[in-house]
Image: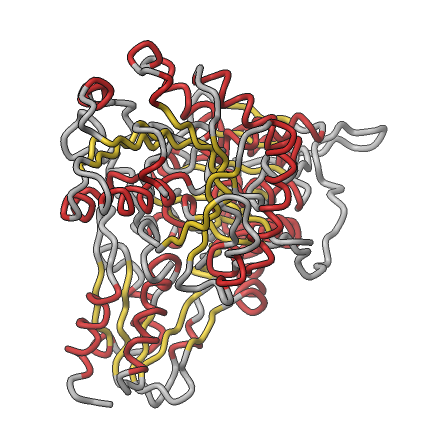
Length: 350
Length: 227
């Protein structure tokens, strides 16, 4: 298929529909409003439904219902809206239902601002709801990857019975890039025999959150974590950039990694042996990617106060090997700032 | 030549067609040939990539910038400055009005209709063939009618801004040109400009004899170097 020029938010809708998503529930919030707007125009054309919930709380619970009925469905929001959805996220996770959420992050905490940010790492990757659970978190670094990941998110969700969060930010949502809609690799996906579509003469299906017997609930959680182990093994993903002979490595994802990549090019042109490790999945986190004997320092660059540092520290096994640079609240980092930061760390080492 | 266009240049087009990049490039060109260039950012649709982000750079080039009435505007409040009307009356200005995308963005113009002498207006429609909703003649004409109906102004010129950002080839620009030529033949509205990012489109010199309007060399203002 020929390339088209799409804004990140429009691309989410195209990709979701291509993946067979027929239902969207959401509530407007900048900077992701093009997603519900575009869905509201497109879904009726394919026999699907767009519902604007009365709030994010309503929207996530509508998604819970649609997922329980076996539908391919999603919601989207931006940071404060995702915070509101946490209760429903926990319920969907406990019920092991396949569902997709896109979060176009903006500055926080609280109502925050409307400029791009990456300060929902803790909320989305570590979990903002109660209980022992994980969500799969995909972190696209450009609009093409956003398209690929949204499509794949539906398949991953179905394969494992998981809630998949595509964690991007306002800039990727608003940025325009040429993209191609392409099919993701085929995955083993079982028919949804558990879906609440009526008993059809058989036994009624139940999807239940409450478990009053503590040992039963414990067993559920143990089973959940057995599934998570499989996902960690199969789905962990990252990208190396200029890492072959690198002595220093940036750790960065999403929009920040775009700026860092350009900084790597600039630093390489000046002779510095530096590269970039870009996690593409934040849960499961690519811990193995940071076990590199030749690396002297990891330079963590984020649009936050440094929420990924703990994971990089666990990964490399030494928090003293990590230096951090970032901006928060919607302020963007620049290529020059990243280069200056790196040069201070590297000194004259070339 | 931008100096030959009407005194008030209004830039419209489908959402994401590249209006703002064209408007800002236009402003810099205009600043070189007129005494009092002024650009108004009337984009109340989008909250990122608005021309007001380049206020400092444009003011340094001698361009007056009018945007929101809200100081330090970093919100999605549809607030417009009352200064917008000044250049309608003060004819010492050469004026560019950068509208928000699609008919929603063009709606803003409706409230100024009575204050503007339509004989003084060039209403340019920016088209990128590779955007949704403007991928063929019928779609482009449909969008044109929506923009005209909502704004109350008639399009006076087409701007071929067909591009795939950094992947743009001369052939892509010419593909857009061919579609726009057919639109032009049907509507009798001329192609006035064909844009080209001359720093990165290879063999762009080949366009000179092949475009129907004027070749309009552009440079990125709205995209950071890492984008």
